[in-house]
Length: 518
Ligand SMILES: *[C@@H]1O[C@H](CO)[C@@H](O)[C@H](O)[C@H]1NC(C)=O
Ligand SMILES: *[C@@H]1O[C@H](CO)[C@@H](O)[C@H](O)[C@H]1NC(C)=O
Image (tube, rainbow, N blue to C red; front, side, top):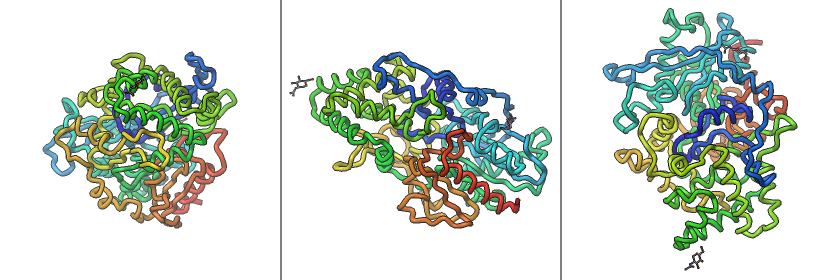
């Protein structure tokens, strides 16, 4: 996600609640795209159906309740803050394990934490635990530095305190972990035998890291599984918006509404602009670009994490969203904008953004803060995309269809970066990252890439047309038809479709072949 924006100010209980009712497991690492909303609840668009503002939540299903049990223990491994200078001090890297399935000599799956705190559900029940179970593997998930509880002792997140937060240091953490964590007598990893092979696995940015670990530390990492990895850093990532449009049958209607909104935003008519903000329940936001950016929150995560309904009590989120536009009696741009505005208001309510302060804290650039606290993960990730990856999800230029306001350009994202950190460069150094890791051209043996063709991050993966890559037995590139972001690493469900099952079984078979397991 990247809208990169700001922080995840979702009330934690709401987040957990949404987590349960949407079957999303922690394996769904998100690149924080759109402002804070990493997990989408289909009922957020209930308003479109019954035109009431009363949320109708679904009771968690038994399968979902299972994910709720949090009985995994936290362990910590001491890391240097700077792998090139031990005098900078140390921090504790958190990890969880599941040793249930391990037989000596079996592989060790190192689930690489990405741009968020790790969650116990990854070791308790996920595609990673299924893999470990089927291959007699040991499963460990290690947290990314500066995320969750793996935070060095810093007073705030100003630039001087984040200079060791980068891809290189993170990769060295994981390498150091493999070399030294198992030899500690107090570590649950000490049962791992010397001949066990390490396999890195991760999704999204964590998928990049999984592949790059194999690239940079081939003697430590035997193989890698990179899910939905946007390995190409890109400053102006307008293809993201186009990929979202491709997934929405009602793209033209949403696009017409956006054009109408833009005609007002660019009119210079202050009172008309203020009326528009009010219509969306966002009149607290002064900055017009911040307002325009907020408009994407209701549907971007819905597409990025799309998953079909798993029971008859659920509805298809994309269908529900699009029906609202398609069934509107008033199909004029103004009428479609009214549908959109109602949906936005309902979304704000569901997210708990019920007062002015909350709305500003989430959406207003001038409220971004380097304070530690609930926005730690979002700020840490923002630091990395502002410096390393870009991934700025901009509006495609006319006459291309666009689902976001024309005001959302690279300068807008950059202004947010430089508001928070005035002393960093005026552009992320995406060339450095692409040169260091090879972008979509890096051919790394025994790396399995899995990408969903409905994932808006697809254009930055090795599966994109631009990459022009072929799948080979040594570097397989698997595509989940109809898959979204990191769909393959979700826990299996009763509605998994053939292409998803095929990709999982192919991935497993490649690992078995390489490991010489029948
Ligand atoms: C290990 O995985 C199994 C299967 O998913 C699960 O039942 C068990 O609770 C997990 N153990 C830990 C410690 O997470
Ligand atoms: C500005 O917009 C308002 C509607 O909000 C309208 O009444 C007014 O005529 C517009 N002003 C101009 C100069 O177009």
